[in-house]
Image (cartoon, rainbow, N blue to C red):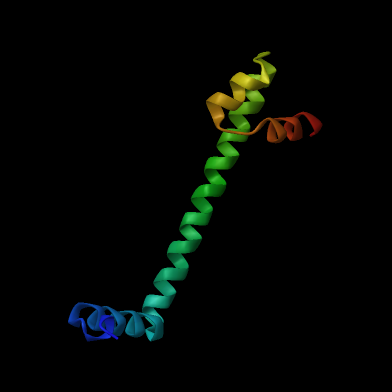
Length: 81
């Protein structure tokens, strides 16, 4: 196959193989994934808090959805809690 004969692709495959077996790199990757997940959770919580405050001020759901990026279904969930 012509692709296998390309030196850059062969080097990239070796690097990927090394990274996949390197325990330190795997641990770094797992920590980075956790950090991303935690940040998403924080942002989502912030959006919910902003939506709650906006609802308490009587702002309509379509405006809240536009500002926060939350769906109308997610805003209905806020009302039920």
